[in-house]
Image (cartoon, rainbow, N blue to C red; front, side, top):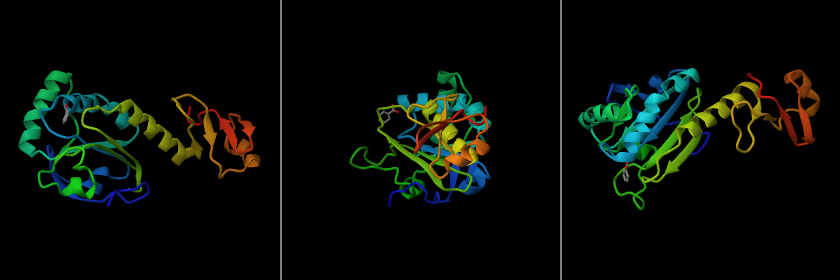
Length: 211
Ligand code: BEZ
């Protein structure tokens, strides 16, 4: 059964490149990103895992723990990490789950046999502090993901959680935000003292509240 937005992210215990991890405990009270890749020692995956390592300070800033997964065993991950560090000029600083028995992959519906036989596709799950799934994303094996976009979604989700604003099309850090429909227009000035615009009764914008 596929995992849907709003579902509790299934908990599990798994071997990783950094030892055994209990997933919910690993996430603690913060946010999480769980992402799968098809296979160790493959080119696109090597670039992706290097990029995620280089973005560590950006994830830390947002109180996000990152964890990767593939169906290869721990020894393979450990050998491959040396190559990632060497070729991507980084130091892999997050755990990679070893899932040779496909326990977690099946729990999270990361194997799409009609697209990629027996290997995990490029899935992403963003998980909130309440352990519910806030975003799911599935990319094909041949397309590396854009982790700047993952950070952008986390920023949007955190703005919604903390300030009751949504983000419009192509929103970037610093752009105006959209006041969520649940807030009445007459309540906007008290809640958003930086100002607001009423473009339509259902389309109200305000400067990004946390700047
Ligand atoms: C890669 O990471 O380069 C890759 C993995 C599986 C299939 C195609 C590409």
